[in-house]
Length: 387
Ligand SMILES: Cc1cc2nc3c(=O)[nH]c(=O)nc-3n(C[C@H](O)[C@H](O)[C@H](O)COP(=O)(O)OP(=O)(O)OC[C@H]3O[C@@H](n4cnc5c(N)ncnc54)[C@H](O)[C@@H]3O)c2cc1C
Image (tube, rainbow, N blue to C red; front, side, top):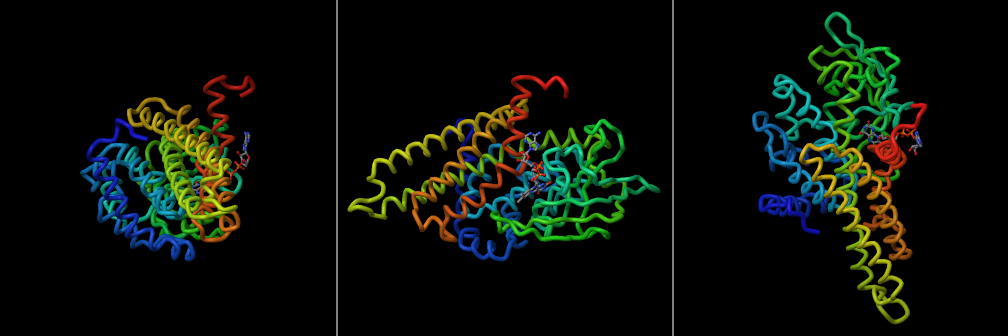
């Protein structure tokens, strides 16, 4: 699908990322799937090529380009046939560090941004807790001010890049107000700070090349200058950044779905049953037509939401719709592409088998499908009276 927002510089950049994925990622993803993390050297290589600070200020090492460049990056990254590799990288570039770009002071940016952009420091977003995921306003981790420092106590779980990452973008409660939306703040914390422990490396169904941690913060003492943005405004700061996360999750998922369908078409063109190629059976042909159509519909919705987002317009409803619709299509593509491979589709490490495991995640992470429906219904029907 073409889109008027892609100009010559986007096309050139697409080719550069595509070449990188082909030569540097694809030959190695199986190793990273087995070891359970993406090596730091990959981030450094990508940093060297200018991939890691696409929209960040020039002044701090970024490329100061536009959101469409990021979208191109996400689409091409998703073609590496390992959801976990793309996940780990996009968490670093677009699901954690953008809060520094948006809310950081010049001092914070000059301290952290150059090493984020060159890939020496890998970032993670630490919001979710054992007892609070969808309902992020009710997290229990506290940050208490004491003698000019913040003291952090609590447990975070499901944290991508949490085992090997270097910088945590953490959400914590900074007051006891009953108004849950007004008691969170954001902090930027080096993972080497005393009192932070990786208590579990989580063993996941998919996204196996991204590391996922349970983390305990035990009297972690950080300077007042580690507060990111405004005290007690953390919920709103987080909410504003979630549209980027959701949109890019959708963009990557549909790009990977396209790839899964393309691999399947290749298989259908080579495998024969009952004397003819699978692609010549009408039932299969119709299935492929349906999937291709649905992928295009999700892509169109993603681009529409991206258009609003890139212009800084209100897009909460559209991004939620794009994520919901994309994940519903991804579920169908995952089921049907495995099905069309027959028994081979059930064998590790066939690309569609991994796709089905990896991209199952995005109906859960970054806001579940049910939460997307909640947001959409609030936008269309208003709040429920008792809320
Ligand atoms: C592999 C992986 C990586 C992740 N990476 C990160 C990360 O880097 N950083 C981070 O902070 N978090 C991360 N997460 C956490 C993720 O964002 C949460 O799992 C997600 O937000 C859902 O929260 P929960 O798991 O607590 O489920 P819950 O909120 O407990 O929900 C359980 C189920 O109930 C449904 N539900 C909940 N409330 C309602 C309601 N009001 N109406 C209808 N249905 C409802 C949900 O949709 C879901 O189906 C990751 C998760 C995974 C699995």
